[in-house]
Length: 160
Image 1 (cartoon, rainbow, N blue to C red):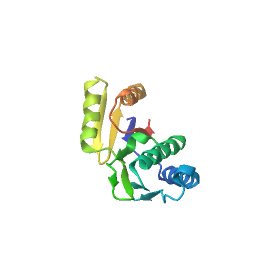
Image 2 (cartoon, rainbow, N blue to C red):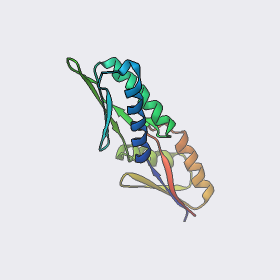
Image 3 (cartoon, rainbow, N blue to C red):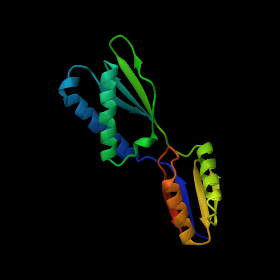
Image 4 (tube, rainbow, N blue to C red):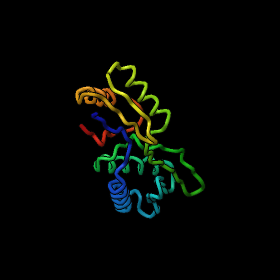
């Protein structure tokens, strides 16, 4: 029986490369000279450090540009409010991975309501979709690509 998995993953190698490139650009830009601005990636959290909230916004734009060039979908970023103190400002950006249970339920409901002859099961942080024909699975993939679920989806482990 043909099946595939719906997952939400981030390429960690490309993520760290994009952060390294963003750090290099911030260190060479004239408007950031002497500010000590940098990006730090620890676990799944990117921390932006700078002197002002305006510089944090510029750093976020630089980071987004580098991530897009490296084919990392920026919809997986969850931006927290900046913390501004006297001469320092920090902002945390969480990189979301995996499909949360409520989003997985939405995916299952969407597939059931579409009247496609496919079955969907939640398996941890991914969703497995089964069907009798390859065409039905391809229609399910097209349906999920059009749906706006708020996070990037990848379709892996396609088996005939």
